[in-house]
Amino acid sequence: MASSPYLLLVPAAVAMGAVALYPLIYSVRASLHHYRFGRDFGSTGLDNYRNVLHDSTFWTAIGTTAKYVGLAVAIETLLGLGLALLVSRELRFGGLIRVGLILPMTIAPVVVGVIWRLMYASDIGLVNPIFSSLGLGSPNVLAHEGSAFLAVVAVDVWEWTPLLFLIILAGLQSLPQEPLEAARVDGAGPVRSFFDHTLPLLRPVLMVAIVLRLIDAVGTFDQIYVLTKGGPGTATQLISTYAYNTAFQFTQYGQAAAMLVSLLAFLLILMAFAVRVTRRAARETAA
Image (cartoon, rainbow, N blue to C red; front, side):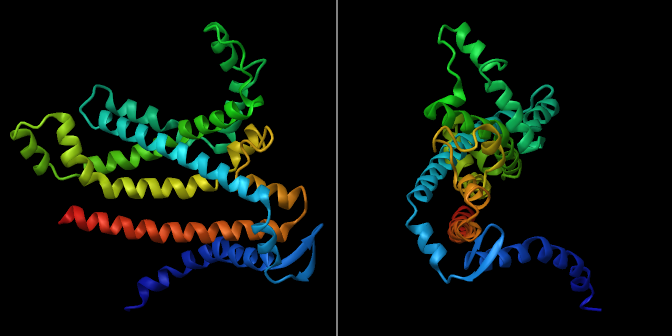
């Protein structure tokens, strides 16, 4: 029967609807209602969205999220590209190196946060003794705004560089070899060959990797909450932690839902733009 393949997809579609579509619909509905202390006091129209737009702390969290995501993803992309170029060569124990590089990605984000919180701890951690042995004093990394922000970025880079590495490595191994071999025959060195041939061919893969990581990084919550809970002050307060605090500390569930629905709308626009750019880059590469 022609419809048999589609019938086989029904269980998966029902499961996806249960775990993705229903919570989305519920969140949109919640963003239009006034909830307080677990009670629904009725519809408020767009009042929650107006309150969000006039909330200065929300815009501060947006700015912190943008800085966090931009810095972390930029570093992860550069490191992932460098590691992929290195490992794509024939290396002794290359398989073990690959396994070692992807291990951080396999650890649950909450566990990563706990591990690094212990490492950053001023009394039992490893960071303060290292700084002290270098004559730089004991920085107490998570207690200061600037160092705390860089510390949480470092944790994200440690955990998620392997994802960029894997995607870029797969892209490198799938590139056509004819242009690269022709460039070598013409006398092009490794650097020129990379910028003239490898990087343009790799551009669609890089775009996909960066967009996927951007979308994932915007919703970072686990590590931040375990490490700093958004502090000190608002130095590491991302939109995810601010929405969490708004919902569960200040019991303004409708306003928190409005924040996250607004963030989702922004991500959908970003995804549409990224898909358009990626398709254009793929067409240009094919041409």
